[in-house]
Image 1 (tube, rainbow, N blue to C red):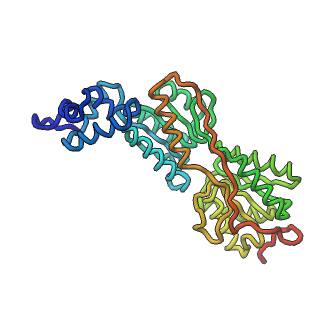
Image 2: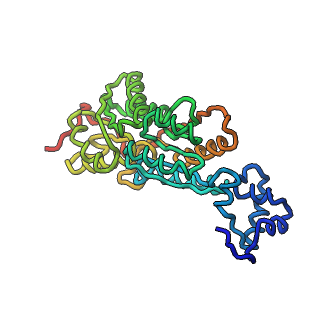
Image 3: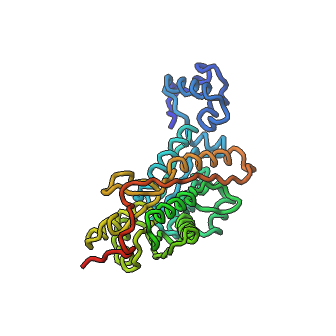
Length: 340
């Protein structure tokens, strides 16, 4: 915060050193996107040289904004979200804004409460994989600009990681390897991505002429994956597609504990490509663009802040299959080996 010391540098001092108006100095900190990049750089360099720090309270009074964006995620421990958060924060900082982060632990009520508490401070929201109801999201959008990630609500700007192409390629890959009975291990019931992936597995299996079994799920974490291993074995599927890499990692551990080998006995595919080749064997997975989604979401939010009447935008990010070491030819007879 700016000092009350009379000798402290002022906005007038910065304007004089940078050779711009006081209004330009203010915009360089509160809304730099409306200025040329070299002007913003010159103003901020002058401010740094003088030791000037803008007063956030004064900025809020003059602009009606606090210089804060809020991003809400359902599970910060899920490795899908940190790259998204990092990219969003980088975009916000480039625009001269700070990013507040909220973690809801997959609890819709907690998300709703958190949003209510942050609304007085935040100029706008990025809701990643929101678990709130559509009505709650629309009510928030009346009060503050909102951008959604992996939640498709008509009329609200959103960035969607479209898993359809990647999942289609996955099912085709498994069919080519001779698998005729595959399972989908579901993620959170309220997840838009889960519904999309489940639908893509069903449709792709029908086209490929193979059987798809849907195994229910509530949460997506390592422990849930381990607990899903018995149900996968009972399904007699020779291959499985998990909602995400974290769930797949747990499934792999649960199968190993039961003496079942991946991929010799069961082929396994994850989604999101957040574990890369960090697990053994290296996980075949559907790519995601978490960082791109975070950056695109903040870009949309900044556009909406500048122009509240900006038309509805729906940004789709494609996916693709990355084949590693957890998929192989179906075992002879296409029946999953059960531990003795």
